[in-house]
Image (cartoon, rainbow, N blue to C red; front, side, top):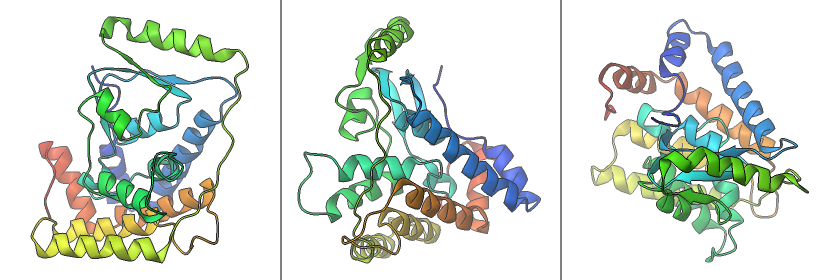
Length: 261
């Protein structure tokens, strides 16, 4: 069984086909708010993924207090495959983790570019251990080898966190804005020239770069969670109304395979 293979594409496509854009935006905002409440819950929330945890399923995990993952967990933010970007806080959470990672080096641009590489290529961890290297799993998260033990291990982890538990403090990050965006745009255009990116890959990637770079900001300012969620929401809505993205969603629903348009 899978933890989650993502949001209901059929429902999203139905809303798009009847031009129910306000309902789509409401769904995105409601998802963001729900995941935010999950992250700041006054009690520990432990995710116990196994099998596939993709797209919105991965975003659930990113907002949990901790994870106890089965060793054979396949997880990642794969929304670009259907012409979208993560819209329920996935961009925000990955940015926060990589920008604040104490092991990172090389200035403010590399962590942003790393997030861009993972999300724009729909990178999927092939194991819980690989998910650690992507920072989907954090140092305190656990890995269970025996799937039959997974829920018991997750419950034990949750109970061990109860005493003295406090939800995380909201953090603000400084993002490089136009400087990083230019670097990502150049990389995308190079991939396009080499034939390794399709025309719509380029469109989606450039919109993703706008979100991950922090929009209209620079290193002298800080960006809070709501700012990043706003950028995600705006980008998601610009793509969900794009005919090429709609074609990708429809093709995925019909064939189970991504459309390379």
